[in-house]
Length: 95
Image (cartoon, rainbow, N blue to C red):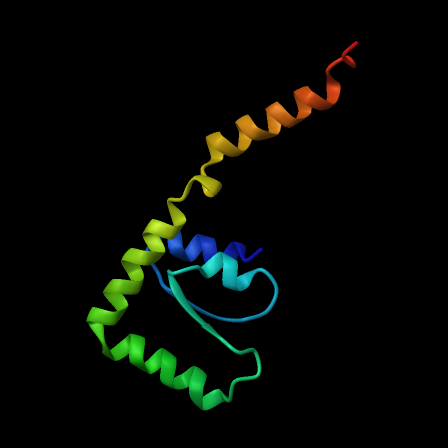
């Protein structure tokens, strides 16, 4: 999981990342996913586009905030789910 991605998105920062591991899922619509072996020029151009196009940056920033606000990242929901799962594991077997 891309924890750094999630931390950035909580601050409304769009993320540019590679297509490896859980990063594409972490980024979702709140950033840009590039092939891990994309030429350096493509990575640089992507950064330059976000840097020089405030409208595009703002759009991805809003998407990042929305993606970070999804239920899967809600700590209260996560704790409740964990307690539910642990309760099921420790419950006596049904007859």
